[in-house]
Image (cartoon, rainbow, N blue to C red; front, side):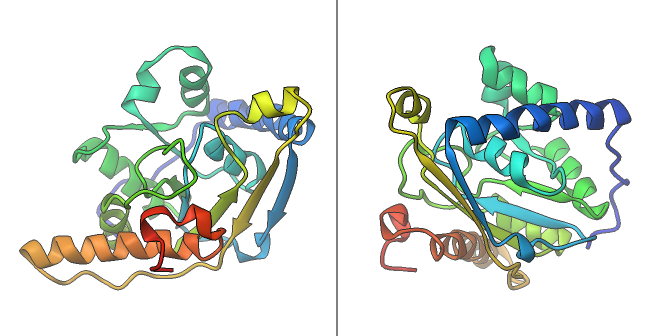
Length: 229
């Protein structure tokens, strides 16, 4: 694990806000949806790791946060952070880390490394944001870069049943089932290559993360990885 970043601390006021948010959201998931959780025994205790999940809709991040036994740190795209409405309010209230999609953001990377260097968990969507369809998109190599820098394991999380119309389904009497499957932690191969070979190795590692998630998902969720899982 990298030792060149400062220790990360969550202020008391933020911990209190997160506890309030969890106490509010967790019962709402049970009220609005049928919730099924499996694999909680696979969550590492007392160490840092990256939680990687498939991202279809607005529901996956709060779903993981509501039912994870601790509070992992979370990311939010600047487009979400800057917008108004409930989603923007929620990410600010939780204290998510704003990131610039599709580009290297040194401040965000240093913040993420500080989290992992401090023995904490960090949630990441390898697809770089929600897809609005159940089929997975190509992985962003950024997750492989971060995991390699921090030298931490990945905990794959497969989420089934979430979609943009979930509220509408519930209110129409067709209450959806949200399933959260937590896989066993795994390590990615170290990246020692240079130049173009280094970029290719990062992409392979990023693809491996989504393939591990896909192994816990139904075939229709495999998307661009169909036939490769």
